[in-house]
Length: 253
Ligand code: SF4
Image 1 (tube, helix red, strand yellow):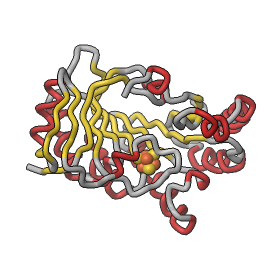
Image 2 (image 1 turned 90 degrees about the vertical axis):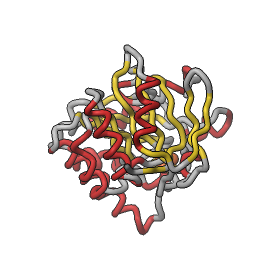
Image 3 (image 1 turned 45 degrees about the vertical axis):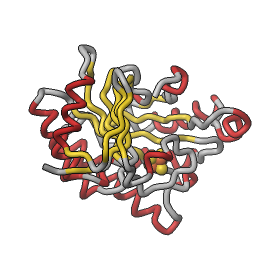
Image 4 (image 1 turned 45 degrees about the horizontal axis):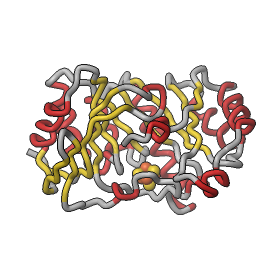
């Protein structure tokens, strides 16, 4: 039985992309190798948190690393009649592929649907778990996200593209998400969309959300920018959508 580090487990509504509003159980895996400047879960970048917080009827702190069977026990406890799927999120779930695989396999045996949310940092890890997933939301980071040093950007981009191709090839419903900030270059979005053009995906432009005030106004893209980016994507892809993080508006986890 595998063990791994999890930051938190809870039930809520999906806040991003075409499945926004669907009920999920979120398993937030610990650790992330990237450093996006807008990261809204910096606490989840710690790869070895001492405890995992489980939000249920009461809040519990479970010692890490946790065995996969205990994670499944919490999934059973948090299961509700409106459940859409289990979200494997982070941090970055692909840092713990064999642990993810064991949980996802058990969830499948309970006839639950699995939904992975990844930054696409490792195509090899993605390939090893893809067989257990029904949905994949894969990020493509832009250079101005500062997710990695400039010298490492091309490698991150090609891993994300490879994850997307594997996902589509395996018949997983694939969502590609790009967070956009003010002054995002139309040419950069065009280049990404050309690379995605033949793939069966949903493409989401997600206006950045940061924690309010002046900083928010300074980096948020305006509506004209969003129209231009969406129109550019539409030249190459049939299913383009602009969707902000709705859980921030709902003030939920
Ligand atoms: S990939 Fe996600 S968790 Fe990692 S730094 Fe970027 S926003 Fe944060």
